Image (cartoon, rainbow, N blue to C red; front, side, top):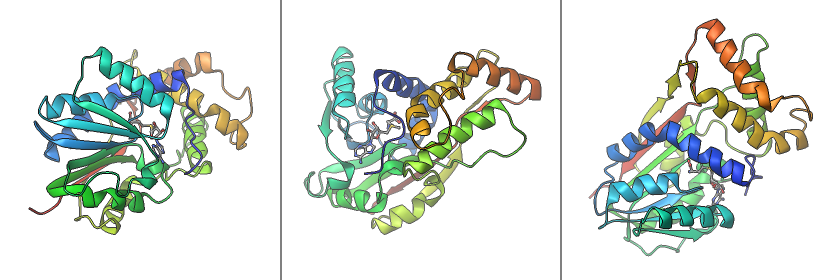
Length: 271
Ligand SMILES: C[S@@+](CC[C@H](N)C(=O)[O-])C[C@H]1O[C@@H](n2cnc3c(N)ncnc32)[C@H](O)[C@@H]1O
């Protein structure tokens, strides 16, 4: 697997949950468009802290079920505790590498395969997907959201430095930073039908928007790998003031703050 840029710490797990709240409307709409509803059995790639798992648990209801798969045993334990605390009984977790799922789920046993910000970390995402496609039932759905990061242009600014740090660290650790617009090719290579696709980003122009702190938190998560790979030097960012500086810049320009754009791709098997 590629080296993981985001780190595996409790602070990163908490960041994932705040990020999930920002992306939730986009992800809920995608799964609804893909036909995920009551009674469906869903496999979730890269469940992380379990935020999508909880959303799916609600969408499939008590007659359905969700299997969250992740490589990180600690994040799975964290997600499992959260599901237990919320009384979610239609959820289970599997610790596994997504590149090794071939034959793990029986043929014709799954109604949907989904994930967000996860195929981008897998060296061969089409092969990983192809390993699970035989487990889909006729009419089964596949729905992923992956990023389309582009290096920021324009004059020097705090937001440009922060975005460059995040994107360049992801790139140097082997993540596919522009997997979103290539998802149709990944689906076709995995033997799936041509998906429908949508490119979108949440924005928030409020002076108290959580997006400013979200960017600072994401810089913090990538910082150890950014320093290791020479993207930035120790001390280049003042994390305590970064969110405020980005907010002041956006207020000055008069732009609403965007969160990283995601490409959604979804398809259904015939039948
Ligand atoms: C950025 S997080 C996204 C979590 C979740 N999908 C969300 O959007 O909140 C990516 C997750 O994918 C997992 N992951 C990355 N590569 C993996 C692999 N090869 N096999 C299994 N899980 C992997 C990481 O451990 C991490 O929990």
